[in-house]
Length: 428
Image 1 (tube, rainbow, N blue to C red):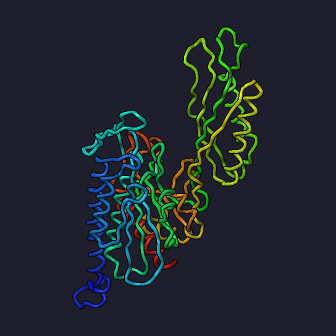
Image 2: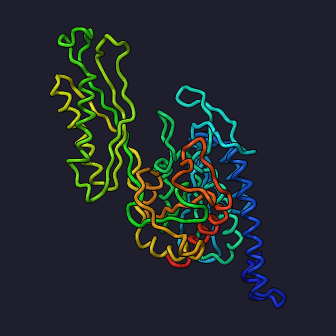
Image 3: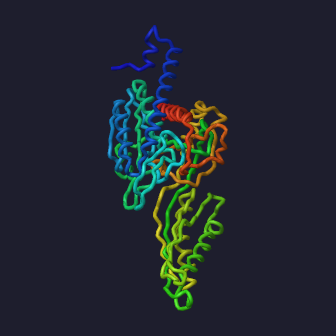
């Protein structure tokens, strides 16, 4: 059996501890270079949700080359690798998401995406505008770092490369929810799960982590308001669903401002589109409103859904119309286990320094990592990627066609996740 660097260092008279540290540093630097190469390749070849075929092949080949047990085709294109340490210990999971977005890249890079694909019946550009290319590359780097230490590892590491975090295509299932439905944690549930996400909201090399509720739940809704068609010159002969829709929109905004306890947790109800009518002089039969609900408390989440349907129905009825509300349940509140965060904060601080470890505010965006954290203690943290000299508040945000990653932060991300994994294996 091949001995690890650590065991060699302890038994060889020719290999000193300073030499070991230098060797490990050289290996970390070598992996960091690979991570950037992988990231650029992935960035140039982005793939939409549930279509991450090339990405999955690249990941699977890498994990197999490291001697892991590898499962492919999970939740359509997901890849799961299992690294077994030489000693008994806990099972932990590390997750990266793989999908890109229907966004046309506007960043001038030699490896910029020129890929197009079909999305909702339209030809669109495809771009890693949320940094999932960096997540995949960094977790591949973490896998290589930990695999080199397998003879000294106490426990096992499950590497989860997940498709469709941005949401499955219409009519399909996907993402974390489908992986769990297919039994990802069924045979053996990890004792902890960790995820990392790059963000333009923090300077490069800064890490942010928040205990407890950290990211909002997200539910999409549709409200169909039915009236009765009539000519625009004679509105009294029909029921105007457009006016009813305006009343519904105004009334729904009082749910958060007047009917839920916002001192307990924030919430947001937003309308994203109004569809109805075709001519200026025809009052239509129906108008559809679509939007999202976001909250940081599961009970409040359920209460807002009830209030939304009731408010829409009563507001429309007051004007002689009717309203039918349908709600598509999305991602739950992402809750970071407070004990896990407390135990890992010193580890993260050792990587970036205390002054670069911050606690961000609540994030109203949603993440399907929340499904994993419902099953087992989880910790999701953020890695800053905004270049020095740039104001994070002014640069292009995640999902922008001008989203830019300072690649110098990727080595920090690998070091952070590697250190967190080792700490978890040694303490859980």
